[in-house]
Amino acid sequence: MLHQLEIENFYAILDPQVIDLRVASNVPDTPGRFAPLWERSSERAPKVVGLFGANASGKSTVLRALSFIAWFARDSFSLAPGAPLPFLRFNRSDAIQKRTRLAIQLAGVNPVDWLLGEVRYGYEVVLGRSPDGHDQVLREVMHYWAHDSGRKVRLFERDAQGKVKTGPEFGMTGFTQALGKVLRPNASVISTLAQLQHGFATTLREAAQHVFTNMLIERTQTVEQEMVQFYASNPPLVEALNREIERVDLGIQAMRIEQGPNGPLLLFSHEGLDGPVPLHWESEGTRAFVWIYPFLQRALDTGGIALLDELDTAIHPLLLPEILRWFYDPKRNPNNAQLWMTCHNASLLEDLVKEEILFTSKTGDGRSEVYALSDVQGVRRDDNYYRKYLSGIYGAVPRIG
Image 1 (cartoon, helix red, strand yellow):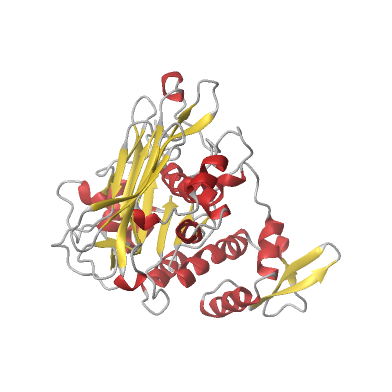
Image 2 (cartoon, rainbow, N blue to C red):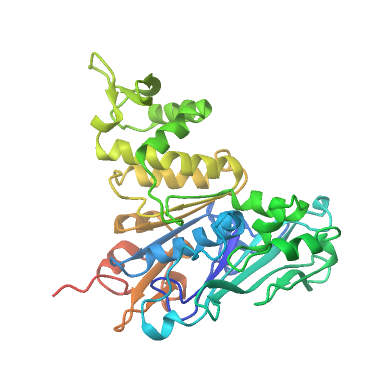
């Protein structure tokens, strides 16, 4: 369970922002809404996180930060030596030369013995520029908190010169010399060691593969045909989508895949129509649902994290609460997968509890700030969040006029 995110000098965010999702101990259990941070933990965090705010207020920056961390840990070794890292600093001349810092805290398997259960991990990366102007890692560190003592234990720590210190739990025997030869200034320790088949790093890289996002990190455009290919190579996903279609009213009966002259095609059957309808003739709402469904289902299947920007775009407001219920349902979500989403549809606030709601707003000089509804003084659990948000009481609304 991911429960803390820190962002500094990354896209629309300049000043350090800390998102702490831990639910106060006096908050009553709401069925399906919260999950323990790790096995046997007394602390909890929400399984659904909704980000609300005006256009260009920084909502997407939060999801982009999480997406970048997952990409950096998983795939940064694929970058060419000296290639720029795929992110932007805050767009101001004095900020471009400053460091960027991203950090998360989440649960994972105990590094000493997986039979001991999960523990809390912290991962931090600090990015800057080399004297010749190239992106480089200034600091990368990972640690965990021991169950028995609560002591913070270093797994590895890397400095700006690329020197890496490790703890015994990280298991670097036979890897230290090889890492020193291949570690690049623009690649993570985790993705580099995973290429060397380091056991623990490979486990961490696989965990990062359970972050499913529609945010583009490397500057390549995801085309619709890639989504079609993904369905074509995953028949169980097609079956799962068709079961879902039977439950929600999308105006279609089923989806099937046929081979066309240029590759696989998605075809949709409609009641009352004589023949199937291809994807490009379907409504924007149907196409949006078909596009986001794999992100949601893969997170639910693996206990991962779905990061969906503008989830409510083109999807009917009555379908959005149904998607949230998938994450609240212990049968549908037995491994406590999380959904992080940005939304403009304020009516969704009526379906969320205050611990699930984050707001983003911009200062007069363009800096984005992030705050939780639970941090706003005087918010009651029985308040109408929808009406109060639109009235401007919570802030984070567009200024018109």
